Length: 208
Image (spheres, rainbow, N blue to C red):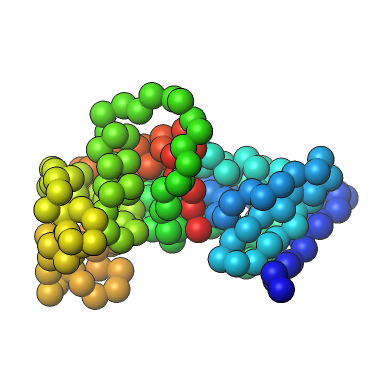
């Protein structure tokens, strides 16, 4: 039996509506279907049914970084985050986008329908995402970009995953969050984030 959750937030009238702090976010999960009234999202084996503002927010963040506009949207986004179908940051800049991505699993789309061309940076990141022997994190992709590691066969697939791990991690960087924090100041951070978001917008990847 498939687990299912519902987030059907009706229009809420608050007078006045406060603008509040802008929250940058990305949506997580895969859209299964949309009826015009509800959108069904699959995330980690659970089907979530979104409607009204929650549906609009999720669709806005499906293929690009999106931002909330007022306190109502912030409140609803927090509920979506609790469900696991969104991830957010309390600022709107490149570093915030990077931090959001570090809280996502980046998954390649198995059947690519998009015919949009990739630029050089996107091609580089796409090859790593598609052919590495494990799911690479945003910080690992920043590291590989910074060090200009070529996605050659020795690092790819099941045979290359151990060598790739050893190329990325040392005894100093293997503890939790250390690499994430180090890569925040990497000169390759923005370039890598732009490429990941580019792949998302071109429907080559999705986030969970």
